[in-house]
Image 1 (cartoon, rainbow, N blue to C red):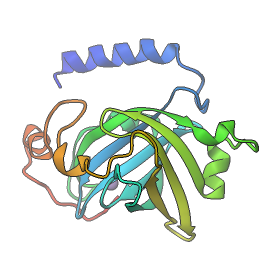
Image 2: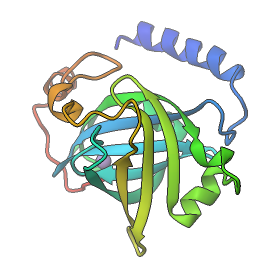
Image 3: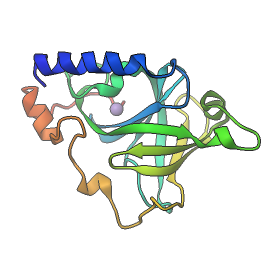
Image 4: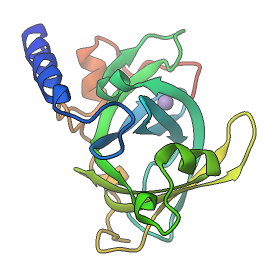
Amino acid sequence: MSDDRLSRYRDKRTLTSSHEPAAGHERGARFVVQKHDASRLHYDFRLAVAGVLKSWAVPKGPSTDPREKRLAVQVEDHPLDYADFEGTIPAGHYGAGTVMVWDHGGYRNLRADNDSPRDMEQSHQEGLIEIWLDGEKIRGGYALKRFREGDKPQWLLIKMSDDQADARRRPTHTENRSVLSGKTLAGIARAAGQDRPKGNHDD
Ligand code: MN
């Protein structure tokens, strides 16, 4: 993105965000899936919760098939601004490798409407998150269920059975372009002047 386009984009974001609810409010919250060509290719699934991006590294990325449970390893919270990052992190730095904004959009907390409602922070602490995603590639209900505690808690990312479920779609295989720039990972790396750099970290 040219500096000019980037600054116009930032101006637009500032205007937009002034009309958005305060940080941590769950209506209008955002999610992002970043495809990350690090030492191992993976997808970073991130949800804006209480002013940070709660984050998971998902080796196979999200599925649209409710029978496919995808491992999601909880990683460090990221700042909200990181949701728009696309580009190349130099070798030797945390998260080294090329990052693509593979999908993004709004999400809703489905547990907010339960008989015993939970906000997103409570859901995260309890290890059960149920959300509705309005992305460009992935949509509908998704559950995140923690099954192992520890240094890097392990969760499963599971598509719920609803009218957006589709066992035949395999968007991580067939939809390989950025929702921000339309570029492939190789195109993003080329634009950054680096050809498939490899890092030391999976996060
Ligand atoms: Mn990553």
